Length: 100
Image (cartoon, rainbow, N blue to C red; front, top):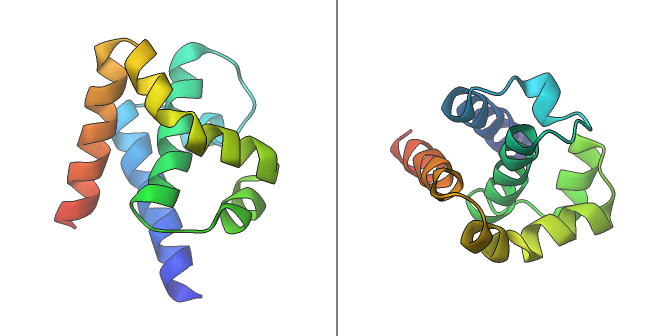
């Protein structure tokens, strides 16, 4: 589906630009906090902004369905318990996605 492919690529570009984390790190398995934050923003944005199903997100990112679901379900708690910058970065991603 062209929409899914386009939304995935666009959001990866946006998250990479906003967070200044390279896509190879976003899609990798590094546990550094700022990289994990970018990864969670990307996965949540794919689901909440683009409406992509968890199975599609899992297949494209290489993470398990369970991992993707945990990221999506736990996102609000992560926002509340992370430094303010996390919420600011997510808002910038949302704004940029809405503008294009």
